[in-house]
Amino acid sequence: MALFKGDQFKTKVGLKDAFLLKTLLGNSKNGSILVPVKGPNQERSDSFLMNSIGSKSRLKVVGVGPPASVSIRLTVDVSVKDVPEWMDLGSEDQLASLEQTIEDYLENEIQTFVSLCKANRVDPVGFGDLIRSRSHRWDAREFEEHYGALKTTVSVKATIVQTGAGQ
Image (tube, rainbow, N blue to C red; front, side):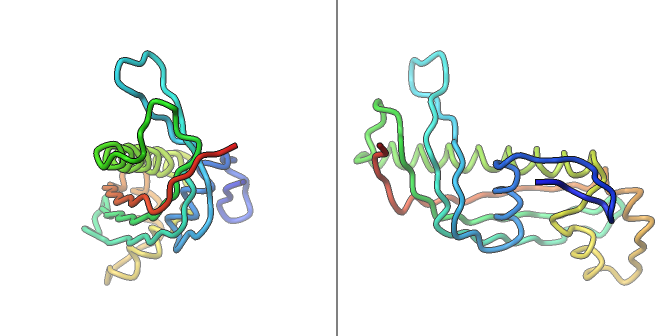
């Protein structure tokens, strides 16, 4: 997927970032990404397939700035497949640990994606419009100048609603 500013190409992003953008923009009912997971006493990470069954994002302006500050809260219902053999999905502790892994991974990846957008001076999520709707004296030029310093906090709540084994 390509990101543009006006009619000028800025950068391209992969499927993972396209999935993250889709979840940030609204209710994402379908989308899959591989999530790395590291087991006890393991040198390298395994991964599993996370499929989004439904998600809701809530963007809230904390401060209009400059620099502005936005809180991102994401709630996602997922199914997991192709989990490593060492995981026992029948265990409540393992499921809770897997949910925490998903939450940490998505929080980190969303922050990375937002940083990529700021570095390329593109706003596909619509932070500018969100801040404009909450500010009485919003100035597009001022927002452009301070967009790189935009502060974001990300909070993700993941709930595993289905588990399964893949082929």
